[in-house]
Length: 237
Image 1: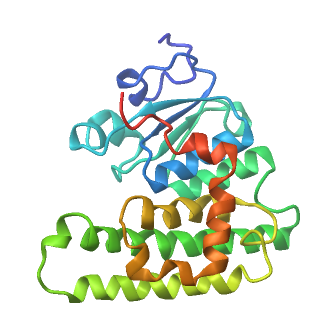
Image 2: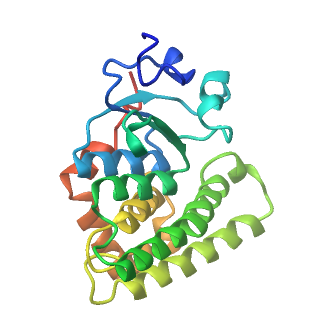
């Protein structure tokens, strides 16, 4: 990497070198939050390179990764052609989705009112399904499943059902959360998918009873860009 490279100021680029420093650099793993950004990049057609950053401390707590995301979570990006043509690094999946939507003028509404409504539902995902479904996964599938006390699992099952109910009512008479396909769908879809694909809690949640949600999930997963994003960067190399 030369001194004139737009990535020269980013230490992360030394550990995960760019083949094309002029393309957006994605540092991620195909968890729900990672898939959000991969799907957005695939949907927009922006040029990008995906770098596999595992969830192991050796990656996400490395000095190079922390230099871009001090919160040590995937995903993160560098856009070498950021505002005013200057490179910019970003972390937090919701913030990245808004940035990419505004960069391309896509998937965030065409009026100020539509933009506000879309961001509202994106923030709902960030505050609700993301952390609550994640906690449910911990207590139903991962290390928390070993805890004998049933209350944590029951708590997050109940909250996940409540949130699915909110989404189901919102989708009544709509194909997509805000009417047109948007970052709200791109953010929420991977988290609903993981309830069955990873956590195995579909039956416990009675997920099939939320018919608007399951139909919407299937529409989302049928999109070619989303199908590609489910393994970007590849989980296994």
